[in-house]
Image 1 (cartoon, rainbow, N blue to C red):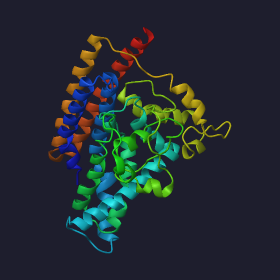
Image 2: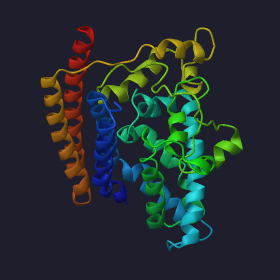
Image 3: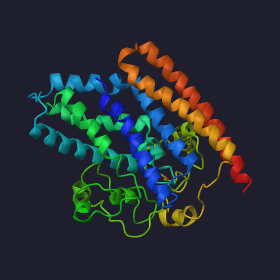
Image 4: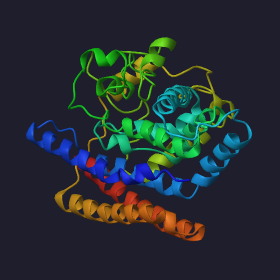
Length: 352
């Protein structure tokens, strides 16, 4: 059982990015930075490559077992009531999985990758992490428990993911009455903000009703500052996935893994969000690659991206050993690329 809908949607993702890029250029908005966008796409590639070799373990086997052994009834057809009911249940599960990912440090270590960009555009929507994806899948198991057939779940679950792609944009402003019910670009911009009034708000995937119900909703009012309160300061997609775990290990406290992100094991205090925000908002990671480095970075990454796309489309025809070998090569390629662009960005920042 494979999330083929996500793979098949890859061309649509890039069409959307190209359209946003065109409007960004025409309107001179400056919403895209090459190094940052390549880093976001790189983490997305890493996410899909690692998921491709763990999908059976983390989703198929447990879902099918629960469906076959614990579900009191089976809904085998993708009827409108089953799809709508399944979407509602999956969206509710996503809300709690997403909320826990912001409130528990070891879960945040996986999810923070999605927030670590200081830009906000459609490439940010593809900035994902394998560990976070694995955790989110656990909250889809209630679908199996109520008897939603695996092939029907393979429509519902990818739709939850696909919906969230288009809301990662600054080009679409507020959408009136829809803001109160659905997750929109405005509502999700709030979620990505590090402004004190925006931190830990708007967790829903498609619907905002859960946030309103549980007191985590906030409307977009003041300009959003994007990123995280402990900036990554790197365009290396592999380092983006590793750095949060290094920071967690460096606390030297197992208790820190289960506390809120930023909890200080020495003082026992949570992070001072307003104080951190006051510093971070003025200390942005804004190196500019020279023209030669930009061209090399783009061509090398395009080669990795194309190779990964071909691999993901061929996954159903490959053996586990072949998937593992190709995945390893792609991860090494991303690591080498990430190390190189990281050094170029550091050199660029030091020279400015």
